[in-house]
Length: 190
Image 1 (tube, rainbow, N blue to C red):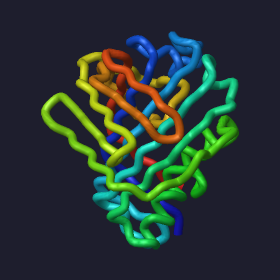
Image 2: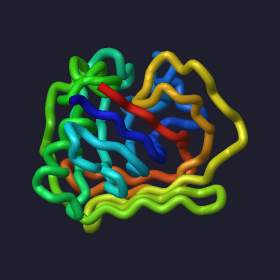
Image 3: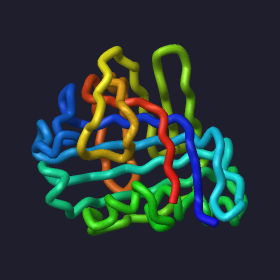
Image 4: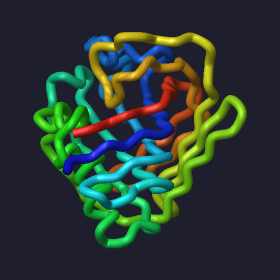
């Protein structure tokens, strides 16, 4: 049956604005820590409804993302039933195929796939996501739109923004603010 999901998306990273990684250029620091957050507004996998659920991924990469050796941690909404958690994990890990599967060859270490309390908020001009006790991220939307970025977790045009306070104390520790953020909608199928 496959899957089809869509919803809201944003990411924050340690790069200066605008992150050169989406154009397959080196990060502005010695590495890049990027936090990705998805809220599924509607969709399903193999008949299992995923509407209203969230997923968050923390990624640590080399200076040039396309060199691979990524370290990731995936967090899945604890509101999911066991069937929903399996489907959600397959979609957002790339295991079910689709666009995110293209990132799989770049990953060298998955530190874990964890069920957690996740909130995702979108208000007028800002977004925030939280994985209870592990991650807090926020971003302000900008006005510049980037189309046809050759590299990234989404294929839709991105709105350039700026990260607010971001803290991650999970598989590794990182804190940053005032750096790069992108936001958009997403649509994945496979």
